[in-house]
Image (cartoon, rainbow over all chains, first blue to last red; front, side):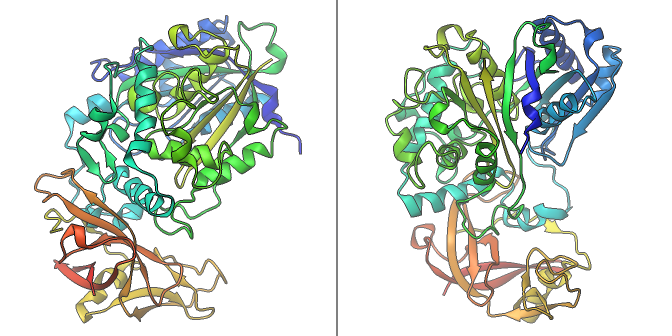
Length: 387
Length: 135
């Protein structure tokens, strides 16, 4: 099997201001991130001939406020190819961009992901009080299961029942994220978080407390995906070794045969089938933590530990620390850095591989980085390599 | 415990009406393929197993087991009476189908994964919402 994503690399990255309420337009944030990514690649906007974004199933207010055509128009780009992915994994814009450069549809694709979920929440009620609900939400909202905190709370509760996960173990995803965010100037939450703070945290949907839920922000992240033939023309070359985003199982939170086995397992299996690298080759991992528990699923589904062993793996926080055997979520993850719906984690993987992490830089010149997105009914993953 | 005060109701469609309204007759019903016997939930226009279109709602016992549960403490809508218990329940006579629902009529600390439950209905306008309570 020839895996054509190996013909793509990430040549530049950029990030806008990130914050709880920035009072700036989504398009303004998008072009800020986009121009930084283009400059970081050592390119000019006239070099960009493709553009992609993705909303990844997100329908919440502010979850996907900018179209590719908005950015194209603002920057007067001339694109040979453009695509937005709505029914998709969070990582689909990166998958699509990789395919676009691999097939010659474009040479340098600007990929961006913008959210204004923090501002949107101040302007609207928490949940749109629609008098009636349709589609998949009709199986949840009539029962007050409005939030992913409820759906994932159910999965986490089942996992705790089967494998004995404790809150003190789960806490380490949040605590590890916070201690890394404290070393990350752009992170949203940078004050210390102790185990006592965590255990006293307001319960949202048991066993998930406030600190298990990621933080909505305003911000944009961007990257340029280029063909490998341009490697000598661009300033950095983080190669896409393998990328995957399958959809095999039931697209629900409650109908799969095993209530603690989701698309993360399928994305992992497919990722490892597309590379000769193995879990032990990964130097740093950015594991999706829209909810802390999802990072545990990724740890075992990716093969860093056995089935049911993820809670023990993170217990005490040493293995997953910056100096540990598998540093994870090095800029704070979505729990403390902020929720850029997975693409922020790709940005941080590139930062680490390029050794631009400053105080949070993983030592030992990391060469292989794993990024995962989603993990429930929808999941995707990418393996990035510095050659 | 567990009274979600602000029920958001489903839009009734040709596919889902039987699920949301047969509570009027006092029982739960699940869509079933009349050709191969597969159960379909959520309801769909075609059997995913045999691709048959001969589908009909079939009454089921309404008894089952709690597969997971979470206590929701967050008021997502104005007027939500928190805390309330959300559960995933498997049905005794309907393999491979689970319902996300509420557990009512019991103290939260008396129900757990494995507790046997039975359906009851809460009527709102033209919708009979299937909830569960310990047997």
